[in-house]
Image (tube, rainbow, N blue to C red):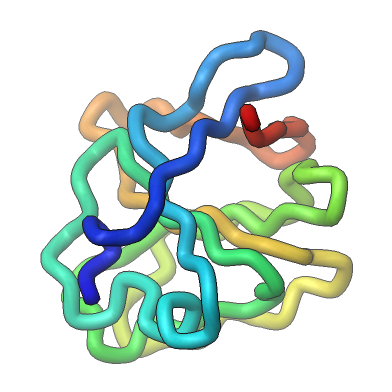
Length: 122
């Protein structure tokens, strides 16, 4: 199963009420969470993968660097790793309950920053 087959959710920035990503794929279940973006071609600009119950990620089997935002239970971004290279493991981020994985935007402007709070639209 590819990340493209996962359900989509909408995430907004609490302060601006604007979506930081066009599409967010939700990795539900153990298999989807373990697989993440593994063995995938690069996720498109403006797209992200949300993995719940996660406080560390790896990039083994990937061919491109990713950006990883670690969120606490309130969906506040508590740590942002820029350009985690292939075949690496991120540090454990204490207090993180989920992550958003995405690529460097073509514009060079990151869609989210540490300290920002997000929310899921139901």
